[in-house]
Image 1: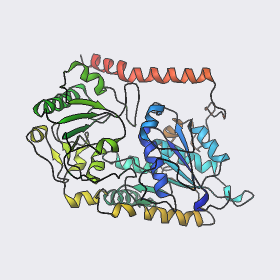
Image 2: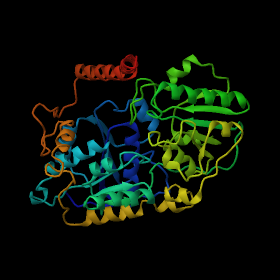
Image 3: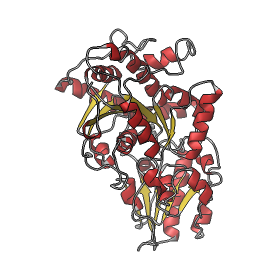
Image 4: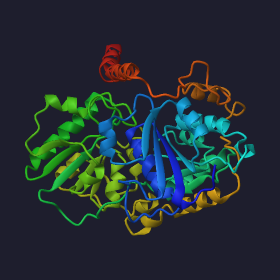
Length: 453
């Protein structure tokens, strides 16, 4: 592997959903040595940076429409299994590998990559393994220890705020794991013009989440309140910002799409459903309302009035407990009456979303660390906290889901072919994925309801 320079940097991003692809690709831009924050989120390939995208095949593999909506460009983009990705990493030289996956996927790839790159420095020629980076797409409000320990072993574990960095280090140090990989950055997709005052018409946006809340009653309640707000304020434009169309998946499974629930309701003329890039929707937003979506952080970064709903309670299962102390918690009754939350400046600053100019330097520390790692003559082997010794009853199952054995080698029968699937196989895959989604969105809820009788 030839020595790297900022002019010939090669980065691979492995993602398992549209949201994580967006995070991974934008993070790659932010952390690349020599990159600039001034240009904003990536729309076209950065000069001097070759970005190859790999989409992990599964239930949430993004569709062409979702990829287009994300608006992130790559020099190449292909769908792979875990074993196919590992084979590509063995055959192709990269400087940086970004793992934009759920925790179990990160852990499996760390063990697989450790096997693939074992002894790389001893091979002929100046070769060393890439720098491995991982992190979280947004707010970390559940499974903190579980998710963090599954990500341990990467060279950099990115924390999106000062608060997260402190929590991450505490978890690693608490179990006796090396915490030096934790690196404070910020969400890579923050940006856009700061809010300068009300639009005409005044626009209220409710940003939905695929898995919160997770039952029909609460979702219908939220829709009803949003429609009621539109009727109470006919002079306002009220938008329901949706993440995906029926049949598509994002990071989380959505069993009860709002598009279907609203078919039985009768919204007024000033109520609309919208898709598209969140940043473009925020361009015309005067009040952002959500349960606990990362969109709230995007909105706060732009100084847009932001409300985190308390109607369903302030509960860990909803994720809105993360916003305790933010000053943004409010109910629909309060919003109907004209209340506009005022964020607590200290809380916002701890989340890394304060628009005071410091965001331009949020990735400096990560770039400096990566620059040093790229310049070092060799890198130590990847050493995840979980091993067959520390987690013999947990790790093998995680690896097996990705067709890997306890030592990171492919299991017999694992899908590891090199060639792109033929037309027939592509049709079969699409049909299988469609059947799975139909089962999640139609069959599974029916079975659950029958079980409650």
